[in-house]
Length: 161
Ligand SMILES: NC(=O)c1ccc[n+]([C@@H]2O[C@H](COP(=O)([O-])OP(=O)(O)OC[C@H]3O[C@@H](n4cnc5c(N)ncnc54)[C@H](OP(=O)(O)O)[C@@H]3O)[C@@H](O)[C@H]2O)c1
Image (cartoon, rainbow, N blue to C red; front, side, top):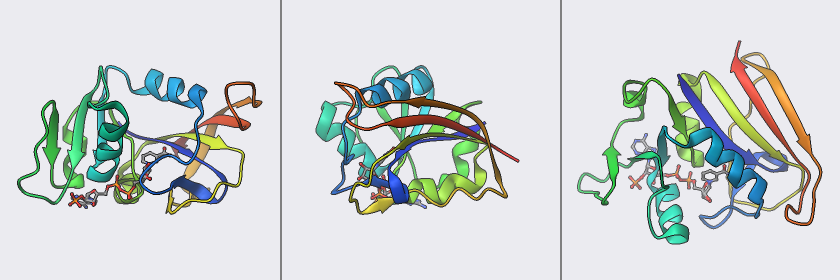
């Protein structure tokens, strides 16, 4: 099972200047609940943005970093050069971005965990269009902004039709 896990604002914006363009702690908690204990796959750029924030790979997860750089290495993570191979990594793999890696894996994916951030936020990286002919929304949980989370947001799950 391959699942993509993403948070996106209006217009499918997912990032700006190699970072998340919002701070929504409820989504970070949701992301942790979905991915903890599992194998997470990410592009080299997203990996480096995580290192810039946390100074270490995501805890309690097996991290696999996709790069074309032959010599790339980082303590505590596995390196892969071909996204086509992710299905064999584990029974459940969670693709956590960024834009290039979502685009390269969405056609192999079985599930999408999407946090819709209900705001128009400028960005420079985007999630692919979720084609309603291919994807069925199977659950939706709506939340209003509060003192900690600046925007309204929905946790949505899609399964491949
Ligand atoms: N909102 C969200 O849920 C979310 C989640 C994750 C990331 N983001 C955001 O997305 C942005 C980063 O996305 P991005 O698209 O710029 O970068 P990315 O997808 O994280 O990483 C791109 C890198 O992955 C490697 N790569 C891509 N396709 C490959 C392939 N087919 N085979 C082998 N390696 C491949 C290349 O690494 P090399 O250059 O090393 O070869 C490429 O430079 C950031 O702003 C980040 O904050 C948002």
